[in-house]
Length: 503
Image (tube, rainbow, N blue to C red; front, side):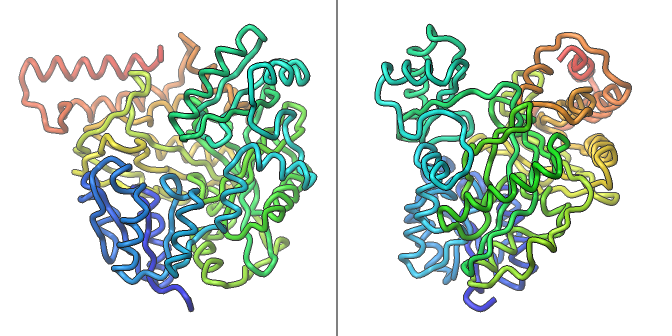
């Protein structure tokens, strides 16, 4: 690998495990850091070296640049991979890594900074000829300015945090009477979430699809796109199911979006892996949304259809290697779908569900199944971080096969001791709108609003299977004694599972 022999992973959970595997397959040495809560994590068990960096809150560990740099120097690492989240899109962190004589496995600090500001990136894209949603390219200075812009572009409009993402600081406004209150709330949430209360406004696209293009770029001027991902299954602006290729767009639109994504990356002299996100309206007009200057959570589905290991490509590019394939040689095959399995309770407004995993049996068998996880049987899911515990990915020769394979895999997935989002995925995968392939970002909202819906037998099987297993354990992950109390608790669990029909 030349420059890189040893890599520190500045992250945790399933993404740390996924990066460890790529590093080891390349004959390199993986090093991880961990907080108090992650001392017994799977990443710690799998890495060559593991170093404690602080308390459980990320503000005391995974977000403390000095501690991560100290470990990297102490363990004599050549490079640092940030994964996603935490410091992955922190330009200051990337600069510090470079200043300390190590390689940051990601884009340059300048590219991170330019694309990290939603308003600045919109301006850059506009100058580069990339289509953007009508709206402002600089933060709003006053409610008066907001009123003027909103009237000009027309309602509904979307207020968005300039420095944000993940739905934080975002407000949909449908009339002028809602503007002032929504503006104040958006500013407040943006300030508390990102330390920057600047907000901009753009036209809200009705019946939108969220589609992103995966790109790779090296230091030799090669920028390629690896196809698109349909990310319209979202809950509270967070993606929960992704698939590739998108069943909505045509091959012609796919190529146009790919070329525009390359143009967007080249506009900021981008290097390494990144994702250009677009909003697509019902007439298949597409507009630049933002660029994620890091590895995406949903990158595995692109790997499944292209056969390209994106993490390995990241490391090769960071090491100074040239991409050894061309745009014409990229030939995606089949369909891949990903479900993000969260430790949360779908029966209780998706509240986080931390705790000990009493039993963990992933769906390991069969062709076209991949489970990227950071947990194991006996592991305690902590309360301090995002509740994502694994990503279940399937591949099929066509969409029907990929969907049916996902349903089969979800039915086999056994996680006891905590609640998970698995039953909810089964509901979505049986939804007629989803199965049609022509669904929008409002799909989940409509599903949540359905009070009564006739469900297929598959759902009953899923609920009963989960209920039978859950009967054996109490809330602490321990087997219940065979008593009247235990039986009552078991039947209560059965009732909750059956009530998924009315969920």
